[in-house]
Length: 323
Image 1 (tube, rainbow, N blue to C red):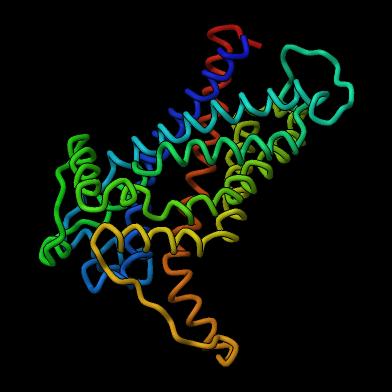
Image 2 (image 1 turned 30 degrees about the vertical axis):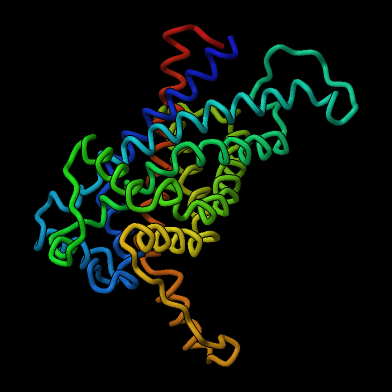
């Protein structure tokens, strides 16, 4: 029964991730280009604001330009969330069932734990382990997704290799990176990605707290009852993203630099000697480019994804009568 439950939650995560990624992919393209534009030697062009960047992409590449790397995004997001969710549920239930061995205190023998009975500690440990495992397996796909998103008319003029659309383009890009830089090339930016695990931890812990606190809430209106999942997902992602955004910028730049053999800039500057205005400008330009695109995008993404996820769980359980 537990294995079926784990598979259903993982499948629900996969479906919700794919649907949400498809809906919001243009914002992801804009965000990625804004993050790497400053260190691409002019190959990747992006404007400071969301609207101006979207207009530029449409003017130079057409609407299709907003969907560069879509297949890579769908594959990476779906596979990543399926793997993460399956092992997340497996590990947290395993910890709860074996607490008596780990902490030497008695826990009632149960074959299945209600999610509401699982402690934040178990959820946190499960998040960390599942994140490391899924990241190690899927990181090359995220790398390819980012590379496909930044290819454009301008990168073609600069001599950057262009990859075809579809799954063939994903395989072609991955093989090209492997040929040029070996297995290490496929894991460019892996360390910053591991450092982003607290991001996932913050997001899921906050979401679970909100969800568990509201589980007894019964609304006469179905849309109000379901809307809370969107709100919880939105808020949890907003907080997690705001705290860890600089690491995402560093990861994107490391990945692009490795693939295209670009030397990243080093800053010989003493930030302690900067004025407040100079420090704010330095941080904004180098560690927070694309923030105002990223925050709305990922917060909306998380809200919609959790809304679809909870709906899929209810649907599967009603069809299969799994409690």
